[in-house]
Length: 478
Image (cartoon, rainbow, N blue to C red):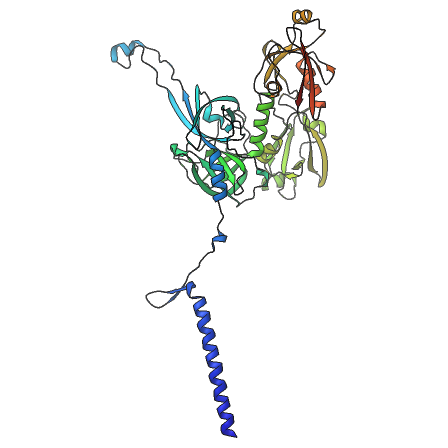
């Protein structure tokens, strides 16, 4: 009996040992790809990352690269004056042909019929602009308009059925999110680099200019000279920024690049198309970012929001009830913690737009409505120039002269002096047309038309007379 038990125990021991050994072997085989051994026999762990852990840029890159163009700019050289020193010392030759300056950059096609967004500094002072598509077709481009304040410009080429990029929402970008930069650095066509969003609402105080709206997206995607005006794209293939500048002591990429967010660029483009100029709204405050010194000085709790140091008298903020020493924390529900962040939010709007702001006053949150104003404290969309000529919807117009009114048997009207890119041209209105009614309201000045526009939410019915006496009606969507 005892021998039988011993035999059974032996058999069970062998079975258990075999099963254990088999399990160890399987586990070892399964993890064999994770280990290696050095020359001394010390195990070294290997880490194998799945392809799914890497961001996939293929769709965004292959889609977006077709809509990014090369922009070649030629500036005619100026004639150099011929002096007595040239005659005696041979510095130059009389009548020598001046040398043209040729620069290049990038641009992004934003409509299928050939509108292209780029940087103002790329095309500034250009006498000739040539755009080359990704398929190497070239077109002569015209400048529709530009805005040095935001460094955005709009070009147009005569082409149809072009690939284009749709605007994404740059406000939704998150720190650490992957983005790709597409452009033509050093004339290397259609170059694609990748990086992450390093910061938002970043300013660059070293840039020249009396007034700049600077609320850049900072990335570590490699950007070099020639990338200016190119696309910053998210992984869904949406345009979220226009590459504009680099921070570098050498002139080449040193790890920091900056892009104008599409929340700013899109509004600038829409203004250029609709009005021929940018309609810039201001809040009418002077701001300071909250730091320890400011908090200690004014007894502030926390560092969220921006400190309002001064309120412009009779400005938009003043009229809304905002006071100095208030803390501006949100604009239309978006938190703002720096002056560039405030600039970015305000730059989305036009004069007379109404926004909601959240402020902190003596520890209490207050919601206010603010009607934004233009830079001069006014709110007119039509900007008056010499001779009473105003710019509206990309066209120039003025109150019709008494001679014109008498000839057409009119009491009052607004004459179209010239027609540029914008809603008037798109509607078919031609030079010489005298506008008499807008939405059945009589008008006699550009200001009258602007007042009707502000009260209209969807469309305009424009009635007027041409010099030959024909009465014509036009419909314009807003």
